Length: 451
Image (cartoon, rainbow, N blue to C red; front, side, top):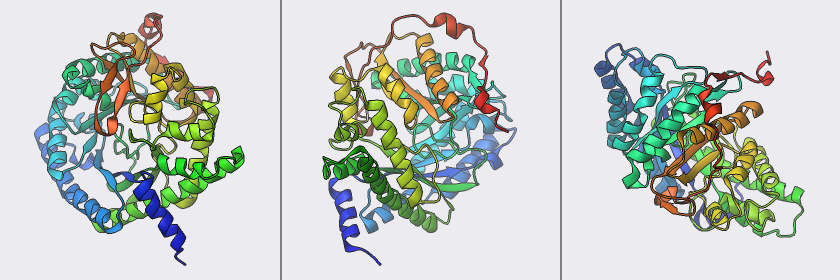
């Protein structure tokens, strides 16, 4: 039976508590577009994306109007281009500009998949694509890029970490006149998932179906509002409140995903449970931690509170949908979360504390602005540290770090929109160059021997 109170509660979440569907992402396989001729491959890619995604935005906008449920982003993810372009052995820029053209004509916000999988070494096309990333991200608006440099099964490719340190710095320099936005469209992964709907790290894995609809939900404001109603609850009750709220948020995502799937004639894939914050006041993961009892995010207890939140979100969401995937948990992107920004500005949240918190939540060091004179080797070491957390704990971790060219610690980097404003964070000044220059492969941990 339909419960009127539940309907009114959901309306309140949508109207007053910043609940939205953060993204509906169509994943498209490009494996059948592979050709030893780049022009032929690009023609096939363009035709397939247009055939599959031409009505994506229109359908999502129709669902928004019908159900008054905001769908903030409509996106596309594709097979990692290094896989698709390897046969042609030509400039991957042709593929990137094809993606840009198709994304623009479909009207989507972003297209992800200008990506490489280099966790154990470089295969044909990987290094060529990686070296093209800075130019591509500076010359396109919608193309997003990612590189997987490690996994629990393979270990960590330290050579790839070093290369990505250089690439990230180049991305920032080439877009210095646009607040270094190029680096904000690039994610470096360990244990990258094949069905992640969130940018900038989304790509359509080679093990995925030909075409699929994945959904990413939001709702930190909803969780905060629910906790505010029981300020004296003990910590077990807090976990139960979060679980029940995550269930409701996920059910909305599941509904929207299935509607989009049905109307587009494309199979439904997964709901990503990740609580995606925004710079809007009240829509903050940091705000949830403070509602749990911390004076400021980053205070002692932050890692424990975040672990509770992440676990409760997964438990509640898993009850709401049998199809859970992607990253699923709680994002802590510094520039995109008003509470995180406040915590950094107050001196309560440091890069080291963020790294500790990433051991218990989704993704990793996300949207971190650092001084523009940071060394490439320091960026590489930050990537390696974060990858080690993912490798050892058998979870996805990632780094999206933005060297703020011309700025120092304490300055601001304003991206606008959902990307928000980043306070430039200080980094440890001591050198890690000799470690990074060793190169090679950090061996896979004993956890990988599970067969």
